[in-house]
Structure formats: structure tokens, C-alpha cells
Length: 485
Ligand SMILES: *[C@@H]1O[C@H](CO)[C@@H](O)[C@H](O)[C@H]1NC(C)=O
Ligand SMILES: *[C@@H]1O[C@H](CO)[C@@H](O)[C@H](O)[C@H]1NC(C)=O
Ligand SMILES: *[C@@H]1O[C@H](CO)[C@@H](O)[C@H](O)[C@H]1NC(C)=O
Ligand SMILES: *[C@@H]1O[C@H](CO)[C@@H](O)[C@H](O)[C@H]1NC(C)=O
Ligand SMILES: *[C@@H]1O[C@H](CO)[C@@H](O)[C@H](O)[C@H]1NC(C)=O
Image 1 (tube, helix red, strand yellow):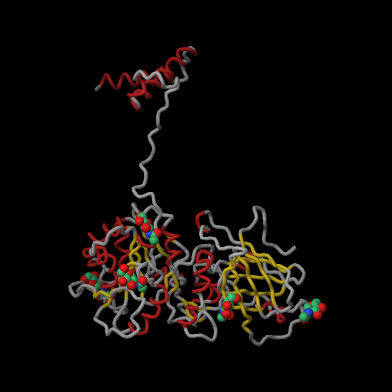
Image 2: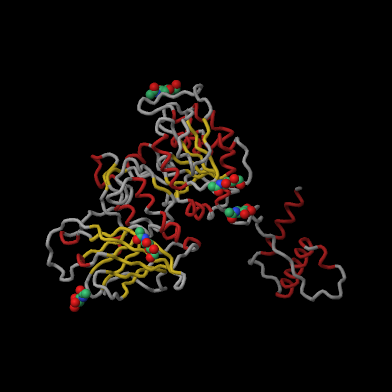
């Protein structure tokens, strides 16, 4: 042992620069090391083979390859939807909006048996959650159903389904966009521990619960091995937190014990807001739209429709180009001095004058804070007032149709004017009120999220009809910038 230590000591002094050795000795030394290493890693390279080339190639050991190199698809995801018997007859219509029989896998977990109505189509199979009466719960503001709901992933795992890579849970008033969920999860190696979701829109909620927590209504994605680890410890873990409020903070408490941080994906939307989410959807972060939540609390996302009809309005654009849904692009009508913002598949807005991209990318405050007293300083992200200047009340257009033109390989989305009373404004001559229809051309791009995020660009095209504005949306050119010249 000792002599070994000495030998290596000797070697290291000899190799040091303080005592330079003759050049050829050094070379011989290097060559020896090369062959020694080559022999160790490839002992068979030296067998006499007349056909072998002079140069012996050997592989550098590489990192282990992922076990399943094939891409994650919808069939690898199992959903667990938290529901209650009381609200079932109303809330199931939200699930019907996104559930795809024979494509999506998973269950609705209820607290009690429900009457099967005539309209039970397009729903996941129903299950009754296990008994949780033995668990402690003493939060005076919450409801002990939180314990039942926090165990959905563990209970789903125990069903032993095959080829599961991810468990995703959400509420009965959560609407998922399954193709975008797949796009997000594809980025992560499901063989490792991942806890993915997003925060609340309320800074106070995040302070109160945690900035490390995936909010349950926005959706929580947990990789299979992490779900296995959770399942083993969760029932004991839950008993340590009888004072917590909900199901998602109970899951987060266990994640903290497992040492697994939250991976934030900005397309999961808890929507802890009141009022109109228009501002948030018109300036969506540059990330795929994965979910919407609290649809009972906020106004319908389109005017003059009920909540479910409004969601149905997103179906057409989503079918044509789900990756591009709600992606904002900003451009300028150079002649008329207008700023245009497109939230693809949802809305187009025209503003008089120049509004810089850094303003336009901030959601306008059409919504209210979860804690009404908190106001605009209570958001954990930037917002802007609805009208930046008096004359900059936007002209708003909502999607009315979406088609795909195979001859030009482009989607054609139409947006119709939402007329509201407004003050006269002679500040900028050109008046957008003559425009009652906007037509947007865009090449569908299912691979949009396979590369680093970048905002799409939009460009105003000439139009034969004064009442119609024609816009093209697509990849920005390498050095294209968003400015009014
Ligand atoms: C999903 O991937 C699996 C391989 O892991 C494959 O067998 C299956 O056909 C794929 N499903 C779809 C819908 O592409
Ligand atoms: C789903 O699959 C089953 C069995 O393959 C089939 O009987 C049923 O019609 C399918 N349902 C739908 C909506 O495609
Ligand atoms: C809830 O129970 C725990 C443990 O029994 C106790 O430490 C805590 O003070 C209780 N909290 C409330 C609000 O009663
Ligand atoms: C949408 O456009 C298609 C093709 O132009 C047309 O057939 C259809 O009637 C339109 N739908 C609505 C609601 O305008
Ligand atoms: C369209 O606008 C131009 C210029 O403002 C005007 O000359 C023309 O008459 C308008 N056409 C229609 C059909 O309104």
C-alpha cells in the first residue's frame, strides 16, 4: 500500500514541469500510454487480422443511452382527474372538451358514485378513491377531500398499467391540450425524477403555499419513477402535514422530502384570477399552451358565448396547428402607424401608434387579482394597463373560423371584429374601425417546440378589401426585428 502511494508520488513529480525531460522520452511515454489505454479498452484490436487497417480505432466509453430512445407520445401518459360527485354533472363538460376516447388514458377519481346520465360520452372511466378517514386533517379553511385528491397519482400507479412514462393530474375544471402536453413532456427523460407544472398567478398564493409547488388545477406531471417513489412514502408523508390546506401542497411537501424541485413549464395555467383572462391569453408566454383552469370562475374566454361554447371555439385552430395555439406575434402597419398583436387561434388586436414589443408581450390587466386588495403589484410577472394611452384602446377581433389550405400548405384563420363603444380619436389619422375582419395565414408547424423558443413574426400583406386586414404569421428571419420604422 505504502509503496504504491510512493510510486504514484514519484510519477507525478517526474511528470511535472519543474524538471523538464528530453522531448523524445516524453513522446515515447505518450505513445506507451496510448497503447496501454487502447489495449485495456479494446484487447481484441491486436489479434492478427490482415485486413485490418493500420490505425486502430477504439471507442471512448459514452454515457449510458436512455432506455427508451423512442419519443414520448400520448399513449405514455396516464391522467388522473380529481372530481367530486356534487359537481360532476356540471364539470364533466370540461373534461369532455379535451378527452379523446381510445387515445388518452386515465381515470376520473370521485368521492362517491354518480348517476350515469345520457351524455356520458367522451369521458374517462370513473373510479372511486380509496378511504382516507384514517388520515389526520385539521386545516380549518380547507376540506379533507384534499387528502383523497393528493393520493390520485399513487392510486393510479397501483393499478399497474403498462408503458406509462408520466402521470398527469388535474381538476375537473381543468382543460388540457394533450398534444402540447406531449410536446412539453418529450423534452424530459422520463427515466429520471421529474415534477413539472407551474405557479399561481398570485404572488401571495405563491408566498402562502410555495414557489416550489406545481398548482394542481394547472396540472401536475410526475415521471413514472418519481411516482413510484412517491407511492412508497406518500401515506406516511401525508400524516406529517395535517395542517396543510390542499392536495397540491401535500404533494409538494412530499416532493420536498424526496428532494425533487419543481420544473416550471409556463404553459400550465392555474389561473388564480378573476374577471377576464383575455389579457393573459393575448400575451401568452413563448411556451406551448398546456392547460387552462378555473374556467368556472373567470368569464367565458369569448364574448357572447357560454363557457363550454367558448372552449369549443378553440377546437378548430387547435386541430389545425396545436403547437401554435395562443402564440403571440407582434408587427406594425408601417403606413397607417398601427401596432398589431396576433394571439394565433384566439384574437387579433390593432392599436393606434407604436407600442414596443416589450410592452406588447406583457399581459394587459383585463383580470383581477386573486386577493383583490393586492392589485397589480401582486402578480409574480409583468403586466400593463389595458390602455397604455387614451387613444390606444385596442380594436379587438376574435377567431370565427379556421381552415387549412393544402395548396399553399397554410392555415387560414379568420377573426371578426368585437365592436365596443369608443371615444373619437383623431390622434392618428388612420382609423382601424373600418376593419371588421382579419385573415391570418400561417404554415402549421408541429415541430415549433423542438427548437429553442422564439416568437413568431407577423407581416401585413396587401389586401384588396378595405374592410379586411391580411396578415402572415411564421418563423422570423434570422435578423428580423419587431419595430415600426
Ligand atoms: C407511442 O409509442 C409507442 C412506442 O413506445 C408505439 O408503440 C406507439 O405506437 C406510439 N403510439 C402512437 C399513438 O404514436
Ligand atoms: C374504442 O375501442 C374499442 C375497442 O377497440 C371500440 O369498441 C370502440 O368503438 C372505440 N371507441 C371509439 C370512440 O373509438
Ligand atoms: C394540527 O395537528 C398538528 C399535529 O397533531 C398540530 O401540531 C397542529 O397544531 C394542529 N393545527 C391546528 C391548526 O389545529
Ligand atoms: C369556415 O370556412 C369554411 C371554408 O371556407 C366554410 O365552409 C365554413 O362555412 C366556414 N364556417 C363558418 C362558421 O364561417
Ligand atoms: C378603400 O380605401 C381607399 C383609400 O382610402 C379608397 O380610395 C377606396 O375608395 C376604398 N374602397 C372601398 C371599397 O371602400
